[in-house]
Length: 127
Image (tube, rainbow, N blue to C red; front, side, top):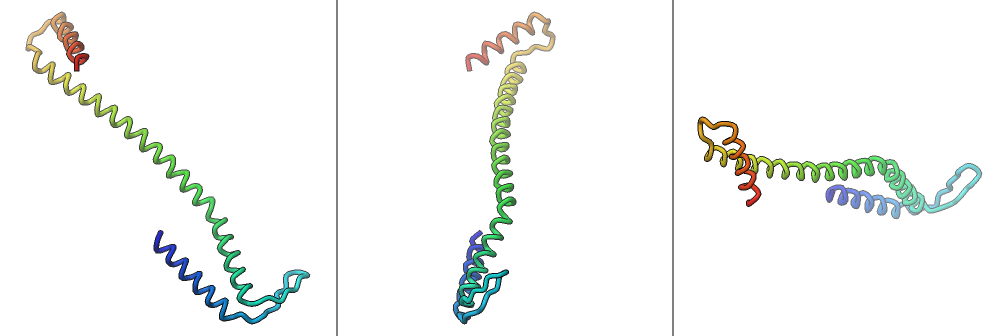
């Protein structure tokens, strides 16, 4: 961006110097109008009009890019939130697995399994 600004400034400065060195009066004809103006003024006016036209032509692209960047930033925030939720869920599941591995016995019947599940709920609620 800085390189662009420096380049644009140099080009503008060169255009101004060129225009001022060519300050002879010229006749401009546009349709039925005829004007006699300084070549410097005509060159600077032409440069300004060209800059404005270039800016207007590039505005849709700039606007579209900014809109896209805004949407991507919003999407990043949503995905980071989801990621944090998933990390918390994984952490909770790891704690549950560790708890169950410590407390499970090889041959456990259904009632003991339910009782262990209830104790896990009580354990996780306390944390």
